[in-house]
Image (cartoon, rainbow, N blue to C red; front, side, top):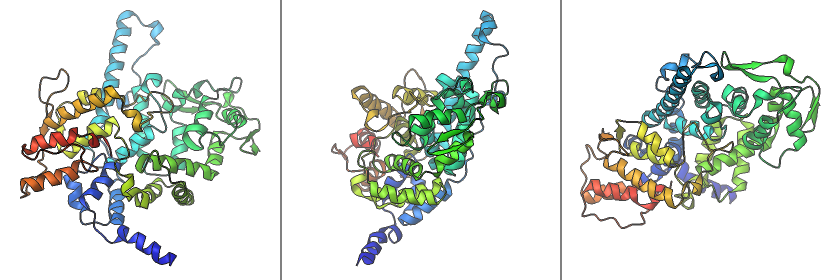
Length: 459
C-alpha cells in the first residue's frame, strides 16, 4: 500500500508536461524569471525532465569579458600617506571608477547571461561566503572572488570551501591577515563555523580558539595580490578541534568540518529557505535531502536537483511565499519582458536604493532577505522602479529612454486579447493578482498594471 502511494505521488514528476504556471514557478525561483524562450522548451517537458534540462543548460560558466584592469591588480605605487594631493586624488578617482565598472559588469552579466541559474547561484554564494568592497577595498580581489563563486556555484561544496577559505578577499574581509602565532585572531575561524558550515550551537568557543590557531599564517601577499602561507607565522603545536587532537593546519580543520553531517544539513537548510520556503521548514524533508547531499560528497548540483524535485518545491502552498530580492526584481522584470537597457548604471543605482548593493552586503551575515526586503519606503520605491522599467521610461536623471524592446512577448502568436491577458497573468505573476485587471486597457498598460500588482513582488 505504501509503495503504491509513493508511486502515485511521483507520477507528476515523471509523466505530465509543465503548465505555464509550473514553468513560471521553476524559473522564477531558479533563474530570475521565466522567459518566452524558456517556456517554448519547458512546455513539452515533465518536472524531472525540466530540472535535468535546467542543470545541464547551466554547466557553462562563461561570462562577459572582465573589466580592462583585470590583469592590473594594483592601482597605486605607494601608500596613501606618501602621496601628494594630486596623486591621492588620482588614486581615489581610479578606485571609484573601478568599483562602478565592477558593479556594472556583473549587472550586465545578470541581464544577458545564457546561464541564469549559475548567476542566481553566484549571487546566492555571494550572500553566503560574504565579503564587501567597503572593507576589502580592492575591486580586483572582489572580481577574482566573483569568478571563484561562479566557478564553484554548481560544483563540489568541499572543494568550494577550501578554495574560498584561501581567497584573498575573504582573508582580508575576515581579518585573517592579522592572525599570527603570537597573536591569533578568531574572526575568520568563527565565521567559518557559524556562517559557512555548521551554524550556531554546533561547536564550542574552544573549537573557535583552536581552529583559529590552525589558520595562522594564511595571509595575502599585497604586492602580488594572492594567497600566501607564511610559515614563520603559523602555529605548529597540537590543537583540539571537535574532539580530535593533532597539529592541524587550516585544510585539516576544513576536512574535519566536512566530515560532519551537520554541515550538509546546514547547507541544505539554506537551500530550502532560498528555493522553497523561508518561514515554514520541513525538517524531515531537509534531513532526507541532506543525507543524499552528504552521500554525494557534497555535490551542489545533486543538492539542487533534490530540492527542485522535492514535493515541497511543487506544493501550491509554497508558491508566492518568498520575496524577490531587488536584483531578482530588476533583472527578472527586464528578462521577462525581453528588454535590454541602454544604460546599466541606473539599474545598479536602483538596486542600491532598494538595499542590495552588489559587492557590498551590509555585514558578515549578508542580506537578511525575505520580508526584510519590504518596508513602507521600499515597497513604494519598488513600484516606482518597476513601473519605469516596464514602460521603458528613464530613471532618475537619465534623459534618454532606458529600454529598447528587443522582443515582443506575443510575436508570431495569433492570440485574442483575452488570451493575451490570461497568458500575461500566468507568465508574470506567481499566483492570481490581488487587483482586478481592466481588460479594456491596451496590452502595454495591462502589463504595467500586472507588474505593479503586489503579488509581483513575490516568487
